[in-house]
Amino acid sequence: MSHERQGAGIPRRRPFDQPRFRRAVDELLVAAGFDLDEVHLKVTASRVADMWRDRLLAGYDTDPVALLSEGFEDASRDLVVVRDIAVYGLCPHHLVPWRGVAHVAYLPGGQLYGFGRLARLVDSLCHRLTYQEWFTRDVADALVRDGSARGAACMVRAEQLCLILGEDRRGEERVVTSAFSGELEEDAQLRASFLQSVGVA
Image 1 (cartoon, one colour):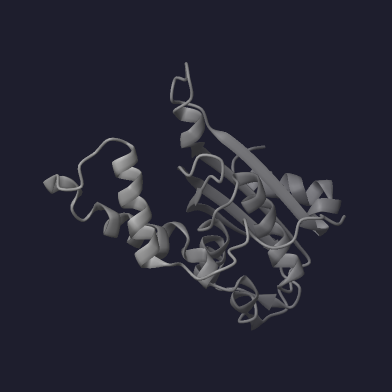
Image 2: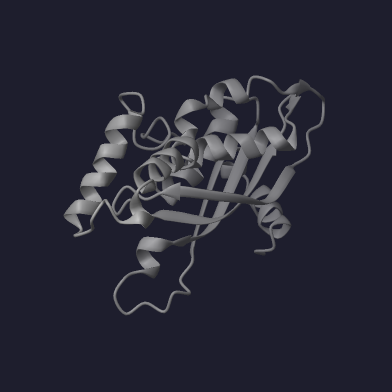
């Protein structure tokens, strides 16, 4: 089955502009009624800029295709599952983070990937301006489209800060998303095996 959206997250058209970002954070603080001479805010803009560039949006500086080009040849055909990979992204609607864990699986198609490489793939796709739903689909599709996997799956359980901060919320809400690609999308038994591996079925 084909999926219309291509790419990962909202596209970034220009490089990260550190000085401009710092000025924008200062303006945001002033607009919120704060005095930039306050001792606790003197380096806030620099810290926020560093975190956005080096953490929240760092995925834009990594190429998922390149990550998936460096597996090693192997004849294994059995399902590989990596559970509980820590993930976070940045919600485009409110510019607040979401965080949780991802379970990722793939059916090898002549190539195996190091487990750390799979974690780096996840980081590359979630450390962007993106929705949990998009990210979940991006992981599954990348392993099949850009790698050699015959099939792939991704399930994410996350806290959405924009939801938790919503009016009359208890703060316990979690969002669970799942996506299947290739043979895992087509085969109910394989999907069931994945769900059992991650403790859902």
